[in-house]
Length: 416
Image (cartoon, rainbow, N blue to C red; front, side):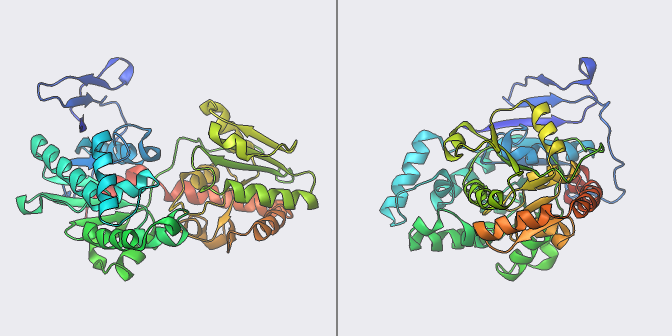
């Protein structure tokens, strides 16, 4: 089943300036948004499109819960530029997942051990791409912006539909640190690489979160440099913090609303125990999902929270003096930016987007390997100089506020 909604900039207002929904005969819901919303000046040059369909395989792209809100934030930014945005969520459904799983077994690609493995398969991609083509045709849309490659390659290029991609990673970047890749059959791994190449072909333009992803697409996948642009990302909902903070207080924070192990939770707990032996005053606050609690040992210096109200989570960001987030394979990480705007320096692994976000170490600390001993040493070193932490915090906040904006991302996508 496909869910599809339209964000229309038509000036219709609801009470108190909030969006309101209007039903249409064709089953598409039109979200009429208040014209009171602040809109950036529209560039004078011609846009790539005036109407675009935004896709996500992980949920309704116009819902703030989908993919950390990135698709919705892009949609909102495009709307503020006067562009109409439709949301398409292609889905396999239970029967489709069973068929894809059976197909993987028959073709020697193994029994799927994760939902991602299903989505990376050729049959899944083809079905999702077909759903998108059908929805775009029904909506009369000639431009489709994908938020990942799992619903590509496109199947309607011959009909003149132009496809774009906004992505934070590539399979070539993800595989070396993927916690499940070692369990995938060789035939499956080869297929994922081939399908990634096919997904990137035929695209009108590619937009990446980080410059490192752009470099990989050019160097590894042979994408022409003029077809890929690093546009960055915006930030999450955590408000900037400008109040007083005592950086001599060793208050560590780790946030993983899911995938506790992949986010570095197990690695951090090992490192924290080692560091605490050297500094008994260390304190660690963990925000995780209910399933993660079993992974956290009893330790009076460790506080575990789950399902926090937003105001409480924001307060934890603002109170922390160091975010320790050794994520094993996250390509970008909104949590890093949320810490930076809270004037909380970041400590993590020297991989993927973090070196770019912290300016190569200017606004945070980078650990070369996912080793608990190295991580413990880095924690102790970071906390040993409170004045350095305070300086990093101020400069990191200034960098984040000046560099990351969803309105800027939307303008870079919409206007060549």
